[in-house]
Image (tube, rainbow, N blue to C red):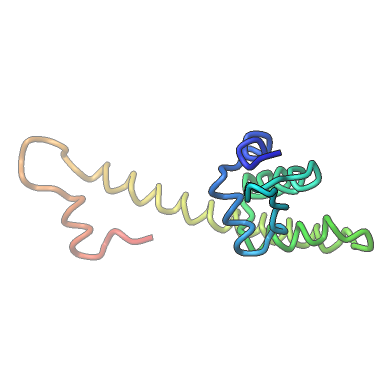
Length: 133
């Protein structure tokens, strides 16, 4: 199938598919006499795998590692589990940072009169460095 159909089936854009080929995450597509890329069903399944991995937060290096594990029939599931647990811990840290940021923002908003006057505790706190996480 052509790249447009592979993109439709995988949920990735044609540009993303070409990028994944260029950086070597997936093998280059076969080329027809007309120069068009041709994707086999197995390649589309790998593209779907990558789309799902990206959707749950894995970066490209992690996706490459997961795809290599997926391709390896001699793999050990503990490697995939370790990657997932590491990503989960990273996300938990990010969630904690985002919650702390939200608390600071809510505190700033609570201190501001929000009226037509020029005095603004938000701007004062940001200027003085009091508004930090």
